[in-house]
Amino acid sequence: MQLINYLSFMSVAFPDNLKAFLQALNFANFAFLPGFAENSEEFEAPPEPFAAQNWSSGFITNSGNIITLWVVVLVGFLAVWLLKSLFPVFPWLRKLFRLFTYSIFLRCALETFLQLSLTISLQLRTPIPTQVTGYSSLLLTMLALIGLIFLHFTLISQVTLKSYELLESENHRERLGTLYEGLKVRNKLTRSFSLFQLGRKALFVLSLVHLSAFPLSQALVLVALNAVLTVFLAVFRPYNAKFTGNAFWSLSELLLTLVLGLISVLTLDLSFDQRNTLGWVAIGMLSGLISLHFSLLIYTQYQALKQLIAKVNSRYRPQSSARIESLMEAGRAYKVTPELRDVELEEVTTQPVALEQTFKEPEASSARPMFRRSVWELES
Image (cartoon, rainbow, N blue to C red; front, side, top):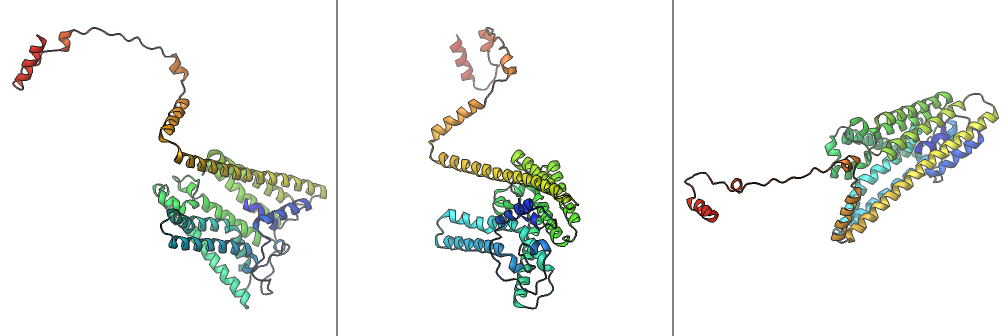
């Protein structure tokens, strides 16, 4: 979904309808947030598609939304830590602190990876800075680069190289489950799918920045990246969920691959009407892709809310009624198959058993003679 928001940076002469549609999607990247420094002359001019959207090669001038997001996350972390220290008796504060310590930071790193990679790539095109703005931008670039390297190291060391028994443990899932959420962990290839996605995003960014002078090559590289990921999803099926996981993401990547294929055709010498028609086709496919993602988002939130309501209701339901309900559910789940229905009950016959066969005289034994004598007295 994130890649759609960056298609406008491709070095392709888009028709007016598709160009307006792609630029409207930049709103989802919070592009309206300003950077923390003005464009400086010491920054090298970025490729033309970036310059047309008021981007520069300086990290600090392009990262207004990233820095804002990380500041919000850090302030939230400090607030939860302070509340946990002041009110240690509340267990939910400790749980929220653990959530901030691991899951939220990892989720934020994964969500900002694409734009961080893009701003880093643009900054590294700039010569050695000579002013304060350039030095601060370069420092932030190095910190962001270290963070991305650490994210890859964490994925390899804590997910790919760990045993699936450890990955399925509650403690490991609570700390690092964000990195392999919903993936099959028994196979090293499928559990590393997040690592493959980061690699695809990094190559996507490098193509946008360093192949800007070769529009057709740029488009074909992006088509190949998406095609490889689509085949991987179809063959290995890395997600546990059949429909909301493997089927959904396979269809999503296939649609995006087709859109990139249409964009690569736009690099050819076409008439105005042909380009306009291809633009509307691409808009229709992108609209379907966006609608698909919103439908999945609504469905997952509905399922989460449904589970939360069921959990709250189970706390206040009497034990007896809960037991009766479970038995009723088990009864409804039981189905009589045709094989069971056609089975004829065998006739049960009872044969008389002789009394002397039932009460046989015990063998002679020296042990417990009083008991043997009392039995014979009762029979007589």
